[in-house]
Image (cartoon, rainbow, N blue to C red; front, side):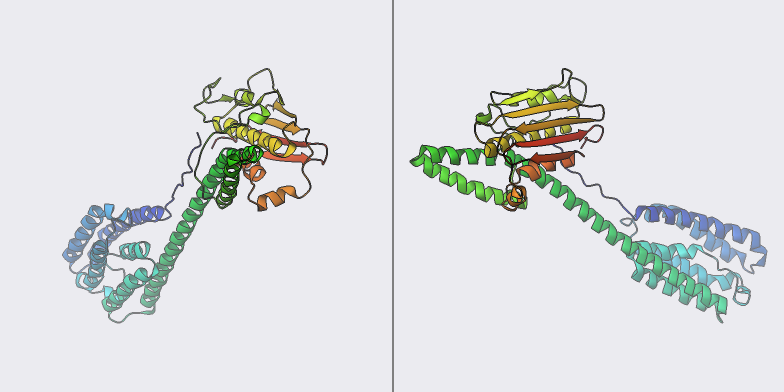
Length: 403
C-alpha cells in the first residue's frame, strides 16, 4: 500500500534558544565571579550583593522561559530588560569610582542576553528597541561617557540588530523550505493518483467506448458518453485533481492489469516480495512471461510499482498494437538491479507521438511507466522502430527502492 508523503518541519530557532540559555548562565557566573575578585573596590558592596542575588535567582528560575519562542513572552522580556537596566543604573551607587574608571557595570555582559532574547523573539526591530534602552542606560550611568562607552554601546546596538535580521531571514527561509516540501509531497501524491486513474478508470472508459460503438444502438450512446467522460477525466489527470481507485481488467491480452497492494501477496522473506508472483497474472495466450527459476525479491513498494509499470506497458500494447499483437515479458535478476523488458510485435510508435500524447493528456508512458520508475530511482527506456514493434526496458536498482 502506497505511503503518504510526510513533510518534516525543521526549526532554525531552537539552536539559538539553546545558545541563549547557555549564554545567560555563563554570563551570570561571570558577573558573580567578577564581583568576588573585585569586591574590595566597591564602596557599598551590599548593593552589588543584593542585585547579583536577584539576578542569579531570576536567571535560574526563568531558564524555561528562554527555551523557545512560545514561552518567551512579552511580559518576561520587559521584566528581564528591566532587571538589566536596573543593574546598570545601580552600578554608581555600589561603586562610585565606576563612572570615572570606565569599569564594567554590575550585570556586565549579562545584559546582552536580554537584548538577544528580544532579537530572537521579534527580529531586528525588537532588538533595536531593547538595545536603545541599554545604550541610554549606559550613557546615563557613565555621566560623562567616554569614547569606549560609545564604542561599546554602538557595538551592542549593531550586533543585536544584525542577529535579529539573521533570525528573520532564517524564519523566512524555513517557511519557504516547508512550503517547497509540501508542494513536492503533494505533487508526488498527485502523480501517484494519476497513475492509478490511468491504470483503471481510463482503461475501463476506453473499453466501454469501443465496445459500445461496436454494438451500436443504445450501447453506442453509452459508449459516446463514456468517451466524453474519458476526455474530461484525462484533463483532470493532467492537472493532478483526481481521486484514487485501484483495479481494472484487460481481457484482450488475456491478463489482469492491476495495481497490487502490498498486503495482497505473500512474501518469501520478511519485508520482501517475489516479483514473479505479481507478474504471473499477466501471462496468457498473447503474453509470454520469461522469469528466473528463483524468487526475484524486492521491497514491497518497488515490487508493486514495477508490476504496475509492466501493466501500463501491456495496456499500451493492447491499445496501440492491436487486439492480435503478441507481447513478451522478460525478467532479469541481477545482484545490484532488476530489469524487466516488455516487447511486442506491433507497428511501433511514430516519432514524436509520445510528446504529442502527453500534450493531449495521455500520460501512460509519462506517469504510469516513467513516473513510477523515477520514484524508485530507476529508469524506463523505450525503443520503438516503425514496423518492428516496441520494447520497454524497466530497470530498478536494489537498495534504493524504499519509499
